[in-house]
Length: 305
Ligand code: 8YV
Image 1: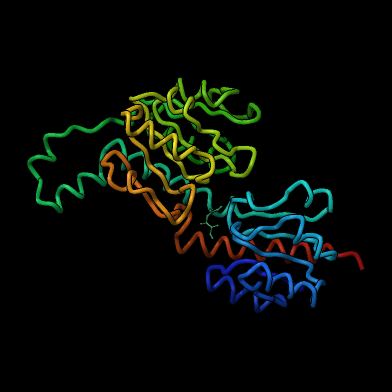
Image 2 (image 1 turned 120 degrees about the horizontal axis):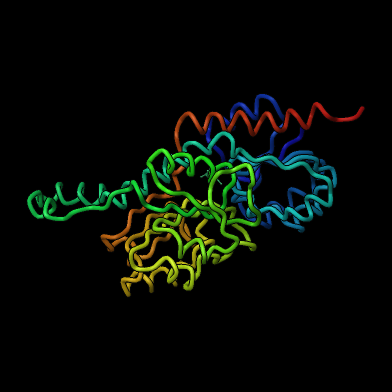
């Protein structure tokens, strides 16, 4: 298949992709991409890591496009409505990465409540005795609220249950097959829980879903963890709530303006921060690559001759 690769990917995946398809790597500027698509319009597939925009302007230049395969879970940069109307198939790799993202979310919860990152810093700063005076917080018995009970959310919920936490979730609809408590509003969920974990899709529908009222509902003894997209949390509101001690602590793997991370978050001892790496293991990257290519192959094998 003739494939347009919108963003650079994990290197072994790029090699495997190039071995099985006719790949063109998109130029970095919009203008160069425009020029390329004036010369070549017959791409049937797109691969992207979710950072590459697939919007109306691009779709209009690709009349033969049949499949978009994302190296990742996030599809917030895709115009899904138009893609659906055009009958273009879309695939992501949630199945490949859900366990690593859930493990990372639990790592952030433990890091935050048991202060592992802060204790590590204290020890390296030779503050052994002072650090030992500080008590941390138990996980078991806490209420975990999950924003978005998709594949990743379910994987986090099951881990939270194994840690003997009570689990509830919010989302567009109740999932009757799931044993967890459902709240139709994220604010009610935030009021109910101790730890709010954000793992819903990004994009316009969830932009600043975690706003100042939600953070206030979570309250000064609540914790926030975000492994979804930076856009879901109103970062400015979060900084102001942190400044006023309106929240106990925050763990973030994603930020509104990556790779920029506000100094106020970096300098605050109540935060645990990682650079958007929740799915970044050798094993998951390899599985993601295989799934991404398999989706193109599937689309290829359904071509009507
Ligand atoms: C990756 C992600 O960092 O799955 C997603 O949506 O944000 C991450 O897993 C990214 O897709 C890899 O380039």
